[in-house]
Length: 178
Ligand code: HEM
Image (tube, rainbow, N blue to C red):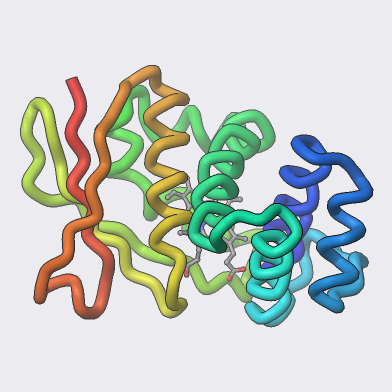
């Protein structure tokens, strides 16, 4: 993943726990903290940071991913304000346009391997998010991201990961609001 993701993990950890905790995470993971935002790094680097963060903080890796997803949205909403404003004026509209975000940034990040999303079963009070990725194990991060987007739009939601035969190749979230 691009260095800006690893830099995001660093920023979240140092904001919440301080520099020493970040250094402990780097030591444990064996990862050297010299990330360049616009350079791609092997996914294993990001994964090692998540595993080391989970050990140092005493939290399950899923919880670290969830927290990072939520944090990423709050941070991106400020750092990429223009893109966020273009993506939607409401929680539902924003979720419907998620794919456009990564297409916009892929001009700056040509080696991006982005996820993709599809919204189905939309009603006035619920919708279903389908999450497709070439990577494994990131669903807790996506759940955190959906939560972050709901906070950004002041739209409280209930998110449920649906376990179904259909979800064998992708993750499905049922999201209810209002
Ligand atoms: C302007 C804001 C955003 C930027 C700059 C951005 C950028 C990135 C980058 C650089 C990666 C790493 C992928 C790679 O390097 O190949 C990534 C991954 C990812 N992004 Fe975004 N992103 C943004 C917003 C969002 C939003 C709003 C979502 C909402 C769900 C999202 C969901 C994800 C997910 C789930 C991944 C993990 C990759 C995977 O599933 O395979 N991103 N993004």
